[in-house]
Length: 192
Image 1: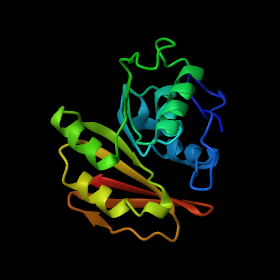
Image 2: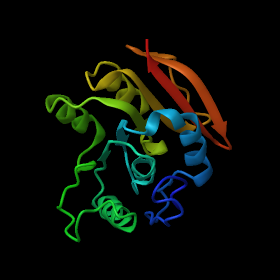
Image 3: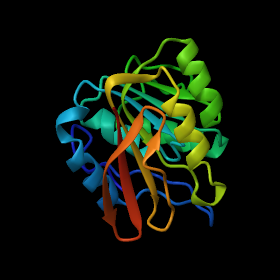
């Protein structure tokens, strides 16, 4: 796994090991960032269920103004810090040292959405990639659809197994397109 484009291009990234772990493949990340190429620079990007942080780091590498990583697993949090350091996005050797360009919320996704809303955050791009087995798609998309976190022209992109069915609408979110890459699908929702 490596960074596909931008200032950290070709930097190898670490990932978690284990049967429940499913890092986003390079070709899926490449397809995603080809789809949102003109929207990443200066974007406020939310990486829910961040895992290794590869998606958010790719956004930082491509010029996102801010990335918020949301990850509950402490081992994954350590990998995110490791990957941020490899890509030179960590301000110092101290993991607690914050950058002006990213935040790591050590929380589950639904709680993080509430905290971010309370803090007045808004996002242009949101990436949703929960563990397939945990079936968190519906509750996460419903929460996002009712949330004040989405900027006026925000897009929510959902990575899912091609057999996982999603609704066409979640309150103000409407499905605009779907791209299939192997067994993985990317579903794009916009406000409308």
